[in-house]
Image (cartoon, rainbow, N blue to C red; front, side, top):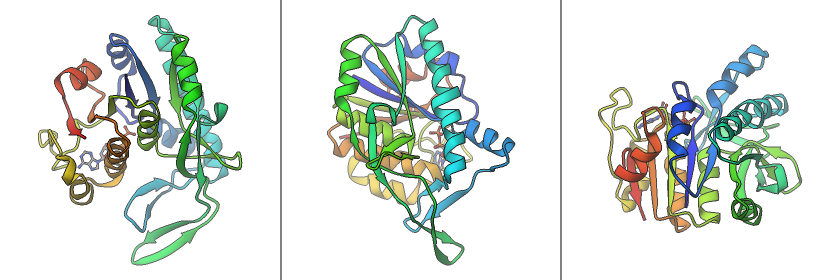
Length: 266
Ligand code: ADP
């Protein structure tokens, strides 16, 4: 089986992506919604705030109001749109956020240690964290009865509070929990680029032993999280991770059958 995560960036045509996805069997879909969330939160007067942790990873500062809008976009609009489109294509999709049935449970990080210029600052009131446990029984129950789960953040903290978690790492954890063979992380770039301004500078393969170096030296911003997710999946016994483009005419088939994108093998 494979786990595919489709990003929420600008420029992705979900119709084309899903038409290609349904040509395959035995998969589970994880999705993002970042672009839509940025637009809606701005319209609602809560513009997005991104922070960089002391270890160099970028994430969204998620206060309670942002979390509410996050739910509207991820668990609402995006999730139901994908479920609707899959249903129209004859797939019995079922949408779940990480809250439902404690599907994705983790630890809330109450204080964020971030960099602001040269200074280190502690930010409080953030609702985000990391997944520590996936309810694989629930996923198997659904898969064994012919349902195709369509999954999105937020996750749930051990105390039962919604937390924003990274979508790529979420897909990685699910792939590990189900011991999937392949994890596909599809977004609006061809894969890991040596030069972000040049789409032809695609790195076709990352040797497993050099993943850390690529994470530090080549990936910037959000791409770092994708490589971190890839690392977590491979460490958890997933055989292959492909970071690919969700925008082409056959994004899933291209990645799965021809290795289009950046491939990292265990
Ligand atoms: P999604 O929401 O679709 O998962 P992200 O925005 O999280 O996508 O990550 C993809 C983004 O990572 C790209 O749009 C790009 O701006 C950024 N990025 C940073 N460094 C790189 C790199 N070296 N190669 C490709 N993309 C990169």
